[in-house]
Image (cartoon, rainbow over all chains, first blue to last red; front, top):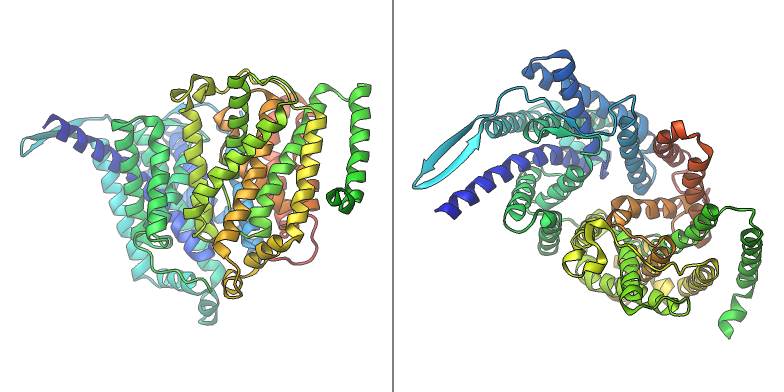
Length: 300
Length: 314
């Protein structure tokens, strides 16, 4: 019983981390679906989100619900500028040049933000906008506890996902996004504005990463300009795990990565957690190269 | 003997470069630091050539090249330290051991992952890079010598200009010869169209594995040279950014272009280290703001690499 409640607590902690990964993975999967680009700078948008929220809370005392909207708007703007300035001139260049540019953008954001005049390279404590309180629950003799932070993270993630589903599957813009990711040329022939759709995809992805950044700051209240690197890579792995280009795949992949990371840290050693994700990825890719929910990929 | 005859022009050119460098080094015009950087350029070029074989010639996307570089470095350093081979004459053997270890691991890991293509292969190799990094971080559990996350210290300094020069030039010429051999033809063929290659009877699985292992072997040798140049290894020296470094050199030099890789390696290392010297110390922090900006601008200006004006394929 003792063991069971420990496992359940760890799984809940894992889901909390996984929710953040899921929010980042969505941006990766949407951008990859539309441009076939691994946008390495996406993890840094996540970092920017956490820093925007930090400044809004600590400098201006903004109420938390406004922080969410303002951060999403600022991250969307950052994503928009990134696409327009760095990626759009390379739309017809080889894919690999685009990838190197993405790495360049990522390094630029990290090191520019780490300048003393900007965010400084130090770890900064993220101000929690509310007190943490924990609840104990007993279900069938198994005790486990969860905190209000976890409830908030799950609620906001769920809400954001619901909005995203509405956007992608119930609006004209969402249909355009799906059409462009399916076949760019055909979509253009049908009168869809490709540039506009790509920009929108970047903005939506960046806004989601911004939400992820705030939630990460609330859950693990220490932020740093390089905090986006590992979550970024892991989230991309999560997106591949779930099947790249597929929205619910990214979410499930994020949760799997989060849970396995926390469970391995708890039962083996925290130093092995990054390795385990790779082993899972390798197994999934070998058994089903298109990911858990992916359709068969035929190379032309 | 034919080997030397066939590439006599290149060897003469290399000998000329060597004499110039040796004169510069021994005359004391250049500082110890510049000497170290010069040797480092050769090492980077060798490792980047390995990636060029894998990606530029065979078209197998790898984002984990630094892992093999690290495997070579740790293997050679471990052998030298535990067996006490503190002499320059034993170095070729441990370099070879480092390279073979990297090539062997590449072969084992390549059998499953080379079935993947393009970005998926990139992600799998990236994941392998992370795994190797985790292994290095925990390596002190296996052997105290390896140092784990504290870093591998006290490696004998054996790498000098001569050995680096000879090894690099020899392996570059060997690589050039392989590329123009039958196998190199198969590799380039697979890059252009894997399905068509398979249909004309090329064993694509074996050829891809061969190119991957050979490229990683080169990275392993380069890593071993690196270990005995800087005498200190840390897991963070072999992370994702290092892999990207090699990739940048291959892309800037132009895919499938050995001479391009040499120029690009020289330019890239020279630029990064040059900024360190040229910039005043109070704005040294800005170095890593300029470098990515330069990279972005370069990619816009020459998306097919610095050396190629024509449109290649990527």
